[in-house]
Image (cartoon, rainbow, N blue to C red):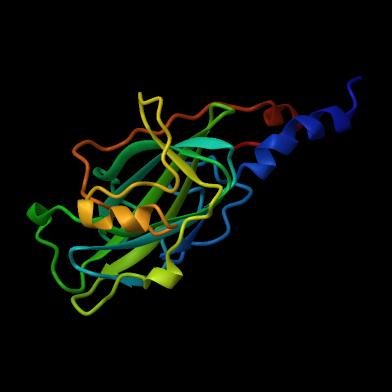
Amino acid sequence: MVSVYFYLALLLPVVSAHFSITYPYWRGDSFATQYTRPCGGVNVTTNRTEWPLDGGSLSFGAGHPWAITYVNLALGDDETITFNISLIEGFNQTGKGDVCFSKLSIPESLGIADGTNASLQVIQLGELGSSLYNCADITFKKDAKILENDQCKNSSTIGWEQLGSSTTSNPPPSTTDDESAASQTGGAAIFAPGSIAALGFSTMLIATLMGLAF
């Protein structure tokens, strides 16, 4: 009989690879269920962070040596919402530490009104081939602000690679020229919305042998 310690050793990379959304405030601790789509097994909450009508800040703690990362938006306030609005289509986040985007822009065509409820979804596809999910619930408010510069910084260990690119930026670059200085000094990036929603991929891990269902 194979020792249980063998399986626990196999699980160590999985456990260390979890991530958490630090702003807006995430739905809750998804440590045991983070492989469950669409929101890591955590249901929608009433603990909503106010976000500006044209887009707001996002920060999360990365625990992977690298992870293909997507950010999606869903409008609504219950479990029937669909994350079909892509705010970041996908990038390879490298290194472990804090990742922060000072502003993720919202498509003007959505016509977001003051008081609209929505949820953000962050997907990370790591080296083990499984997707991890986390969500944060927000309310769009006309008087809401993005995070201040001293509240939104990238760790020096964090890098960025566009999918299909062989070059790495550190920290994540901005999409606007006037933000380039900030992106070279640990500042956070500003992103325009993407055009297609990201699809998560999941596989069953060796942990299922121990009766753990992700």
